[in-house]
Length: 255
Image (cartoon, rainbow, N blue to C red):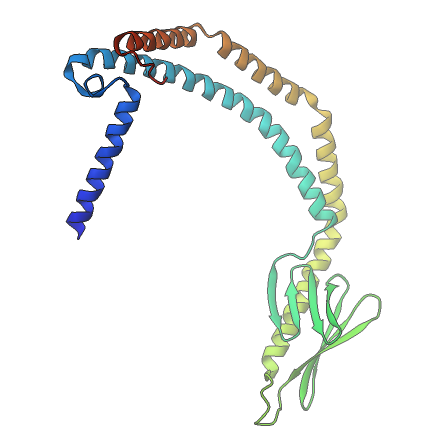
């Protein structure tokens, strides 16, 4: 089977190469493959290579100049995104979850009989309570609103409801408390970070010299590429080689 597959791949590959060769050197089988026209094919191939090399050098020079300008614009965009994240951190990545509570970096998602809502971690108070039938986590928001998440640990043998041991619930409550501490510290740093980043963005926007220099450099490179005598000569030589091939075969080859 492997040998047959190799044969099939070889046949397909050879077929593709033949088609490519016929397209690159149009006019018939002899013009594409015969040793009689090998020198003519070499002349066309060499002209193509020189024109392609000249075009590649021009593209690389323009790409480098465009990259300098893109770096300036990318830095400005990064600062804008950083400011947006500081002003609105969003949910953040999920850290853990237990029962009706899912803990994210910046908030808790609470699912209850009344629906699902998000509770910001900033200034949130969390308390664990051990009950006879349910362990509880009490969430007290900055507004004073309280939510109790219940975790049953003593159920009838026939009850299919999930049971939670004390250590699991306590550890989750501690995880919430640690996330709250991190969030409070993060919020405390925001004003300073926001002020610094806004100032950096303002300076970046105000300093138009770097951006104008990058634009001018790009314009100069494009102008030089259009007037490059080596590229012009290579393109002219390729066109001459294509015309020679057309004269020989009656078919215009691709560039």
